[in-house]
Image (cartoon, rainbow, N blue to C red):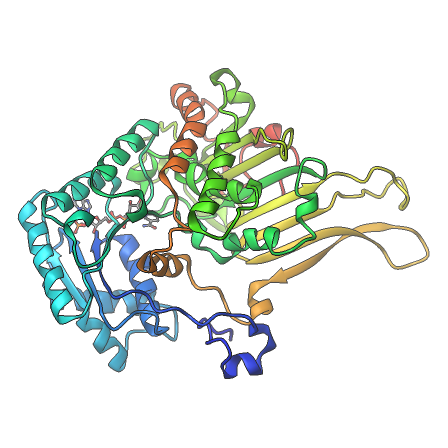
Length: 519
Ligand code: NDP
């Protein structure tokens, strides 16, 4: 079985296993208290708690560490510890279940405040707890506030942090940072309103807006692929690239999130954040350094160069869909409108596809096709860069299809890079066929990449904002999709449901672009 832990650089692991050469030792984060607003929720138990526990298991948490849960559900400290243990029994990966001395010391770092988010007194109680942690647990005055509640509660929490003197300006002993879960707003206007509240209390360098896609290793590798090699960058432009397609497909439906999803849809839920961020990494210019702002400046420039769709063009550059009943892996599943908490005549899209262009010297005329959807044939996230066809045919009989070269960055479930190129089929004839050169993280480096939340939490504790989204980019991303949102929301699609669960998506997606890769 592959290991999940990253070995220390230069240790026995590296000497014995050449695949591990160059892998850095883990860096311990700053001492701090993390306050988890929404610690009784789904994200905390499935993602955040296992990520923090894994950091502890890998020795990446400092001795001075505390985690305070803050939510409405009633727990005493002991009950919260027991709740966390039960969740880890279920959600921590095999081999890292909460056991023994390590769990006992970790459990002692956990505490909980049962709170009404509208009562300043509960935030003052939190401040006292944090001061106590600084004295007793050595958390050094450093505070990481993680907002894992429904977004409607974000402004109230930030306001209360200010009123209870928990803002960065009131902290004379250490740093105060806020991590804000997605979605950051539900449209341009609400995002701007939220930002106004945020900036009244926090400076941009204290704000960590999560897009967990950016924490995935293959996503981080896009920059390495482009800027740590010489062979790709010379052809990474309109002269050689025909098109780029970015896919984020899920086979699951909306599970028990109908209330949220029926007001969101695929465009808001996936394209505005994850998929546009992938586009930025593919299209950005080389940053002058690996500094967080040098990178984020280049991403901002990409978003600035994406032409805003005109309302009258929206139907020509987009396709939307909603799943009906169907089957996935041989099992019958209901249609979207039959899911719990979904309106029976809902106009919400569960599939969205767009064609965008980046108006720059490098990319003029190259279409970027983006698609995301639920209940599709397969769970797959990838970026496929298709190169231009050969200019003159030398090989192959006329019946042979000579495919253009394609570079595929595989994000999930496989993680790696594949290059499709043409080769001669062995034999007396000059038949040509596509073959693939594949790199996979698991086999290439000998261990699985850590989950995105682990990386993002440790970066926030260390003060590295590279993988978090800056406000100016969030605002531009909303500006780009707003015309599409406006048109879709104001024009009912009478063809819904227009794809069966387990399909490749609606036929209209093929009208937008005939060459989508099959899922
Ligand atoms: P849940 O609804 O499961 O949990 C929300 C948490 O917030 C609970 O602890 C709940 O506490 C608290 N809460 C809910 N309503 C209120 C309220 N009105 N006032 C105060 N507290 C409230 O949500 P999730 O955990 O699924 O999501 C949390 C955030 O993370 C959201 O912003 C979501 O968009 C984002 N997110 C979630 C993902 C997921 O997979 N779950 C994935 C990506 C992002 P209590 O019930 O004790 O009051």
